[in-house]
Image (cartoon, rainbow, N blue to C red; front, side, top):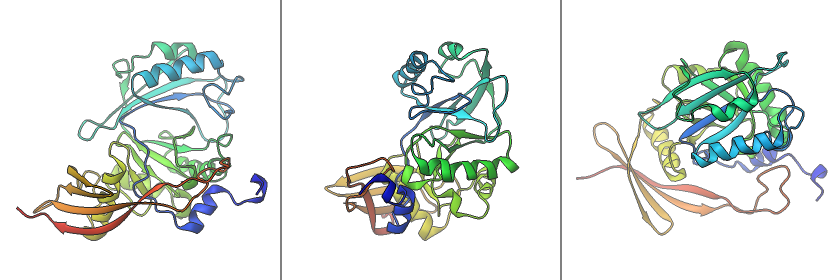
Length: 298
């Protein structure tokens, strides 16, 4: 089937009822750099009209060498003139979340920004980034730009479009920083900004939450089932205490009151699927089926 003949990947995902939980890409620290203008398939190395590709590659390699997730950001709607070069660094480590930001005179100066955040000013979050990287995947443009605009209407200073952050089939995708809450299908709700409002109150919307980027996929899935059965929607609820693996079955011990919870999950492989609009070869992805949720003994 030609690419033009098949449904967009996010439509296919919804038709299959692909689960959102347990799918957030890993990220403990983040580097977000303003690159205003049109992005190519790679925002940093494929957008020569706004950023020299060699400089972009050097920026990406520097961030990756420090173990950081990097994304380009830009304001929704009309582009500012002249271009500005703002940056943010976030830590999503549980219990050590922080967010700082600053601005430099040129993109070359991004190479001099200390990656430990020491040169930044504290930002009273949240920072909302919505993937709108259309040259990477059409679903991100079609769904993401609408969501970014809707959220920016209520949170204009906090909201940015961003380049690819994973999970194209779950567009519109969004990450809330500094806690690293990854959401999918955000365009499916009447008021996407309500998710951000809940975040400012220390809560999550579990129905669209893919997971917290600081945690492994199995922990993300376990937290989802704990919330589903016990209802605590606070961000820090059900912190992982231990993970025990036995073949394809994982038992996750989560903090809870009055006693911890044990969540047993079975890892399965999906039917072959196309995870992006540009994918040509179907692949299987790991999913998690609930076996049990119970109060830990002992």
